[in-house]
Length: 113
Image 1 (cartoon, rainbow, N blue to C red):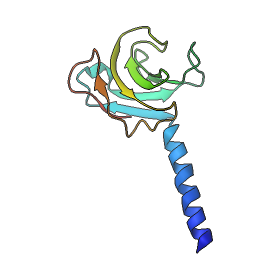
Image 2: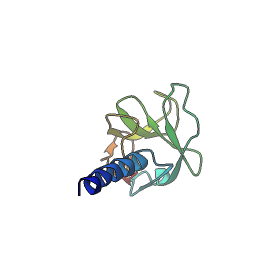
Image 3: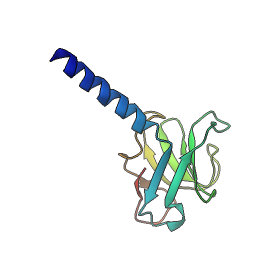
Image 4: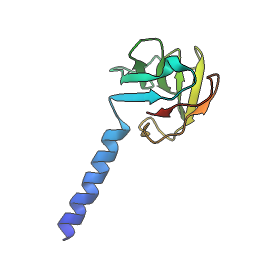
C-alpha cells in the first residue's frame, strides 16, 4: 500500500512537470483574433534568457517576463505590443490553467494555453 501511494505521488509530480513545460500550447477565444492558434515552444531562449512560444504564423509570441507571461508581437522583453498577460510565479507555470488579462488586446481575453 505504501509503495502504491508513493508511486501515485511520483506520477502526479511527473505529470505536473510535463504539462508545465508543454512543447505546444493553443490559445483560443481572444478578441484580437490573430493571436488565436497554436504556439510551439522555442528550442532557445530569447535575448533576455527567458523561454517563449512562437505562433504558427510567426507574428505572435507567448513570452515569460520574470513574473508573468505575455502574448505579444515580440519575443524580446519590453518590445513589441502586448495584447494579453497573466501573472505567473515561474517560467514552468502550467499555461493551460492561467487566466489571461487584457492589456492592449480586444475583449474577450483568451482561454487555454
